[in-house]
Image 1 (spheres, rainbow, N blue to C red):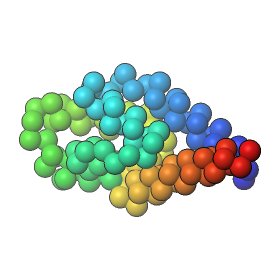
Image 2: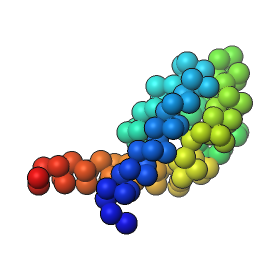
Image 3: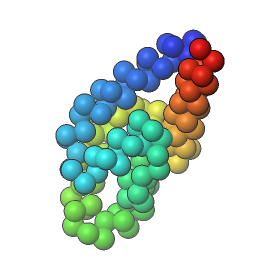
Image 4: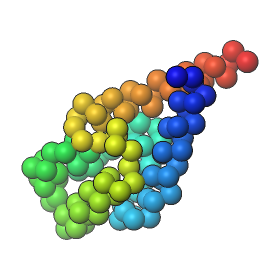
Length: 113
């Protein structure tokens, strides 16, 4: 698969997910955007949900805001997030590595032009 195709595919999937961030509670939007677009590790609550770890997610629901956000976050993942970006710790880490690798390759490709 060419780098250009790979980038365009990821860019389209990520763009669509980011366009629907408004379905998330406001306090989760930046973390989700930074995770999907840049591969940055989100906070413990969001990591637990991305990892499909319900017990840990609920353990991070010490405030009412996160407890009320659990369903909204799950629905966002189900309907808008790239399937490769969530579901287990391994999938989350692989997503982060893939985004970092793609970014690095694009930077190197741009530097050689």
